Length: 383
Image (cartoon, rainbow, N blue to C red; front, side, top):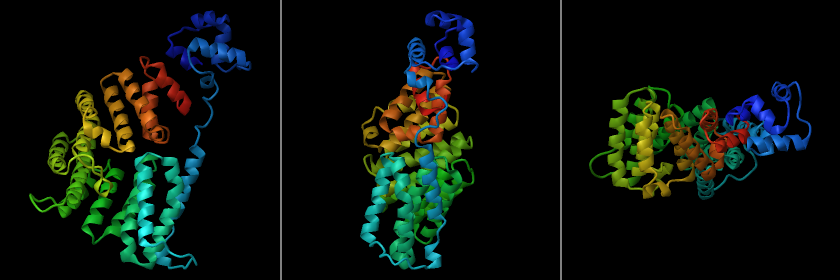
């Protein structure tokens, strides 16, 4: 109650006057000396504060889905900890055919790109187990599915803030892909996401990019997409390290490749194209602390046709970066606006991603933030 009162810029006395209570009564409630037991009183307070009554009741409740998410991550960890390809233990069950396994992998990638993270947490343990079994039976036929399963697992775990486990999945993907330059490049894209804060990882991205291409001629759109995605990852790693020049040069190089690929494609689950590169410029500028430039690029990028062709997950993740950019320009109103847009676009991106929840909390704490973002923060249990 105290937090919401201050957000409304009400003193204890003025708040008490509107409620028809004494200042002492308000002070005791805010200090926890006196509890709010009557529903009618809670409704009166909520009306004065202009919030839903539930906002006064849910502050100490653990956000919905947290326990389920932790249990799901534990199951993913258990699946990653199994080594049937090494132990060679028969299970008595028939191994999935390569075609069916490929369909299952496509399904989980689609689930990820639609930002249905709770559902993906449910699906991945069984998928990881199945690709392990298929690989144990026929390493050559099962390798692509194994790499892709590890890739999407790493991508999800990054979203959920499970850095160490994400690194394990990405490292497994790199190991399984060894000897195949295309699969290795695919795995390296996720490794770059996991190791965004490691300056040394940039060299790995560039090495993988140079293996896959590019040359002036003879590279397919699929290969160009992989190479460009790796350049983008290297650029973001450089930006995180504060290297403005390297980040800019790498993104310019990626933009040249993107122009040859075009928007509206998703080769090797990279979503690479001109729009993706422009959004990466926003992220790089935010990492470098250049809010004004990030905001300008964001507002231009979301007005292009390519923006609408990007996956739901990609757009929502970008809007969270845009919120960070607006915060850097002391514009909490627009930061709140894009966060609410992200929540409408892909609720799980905001509700289940710790990095996003942190941005919501930061915006909600700003005295000039609108009440709508405060309500979202309260609903998420983060204020």
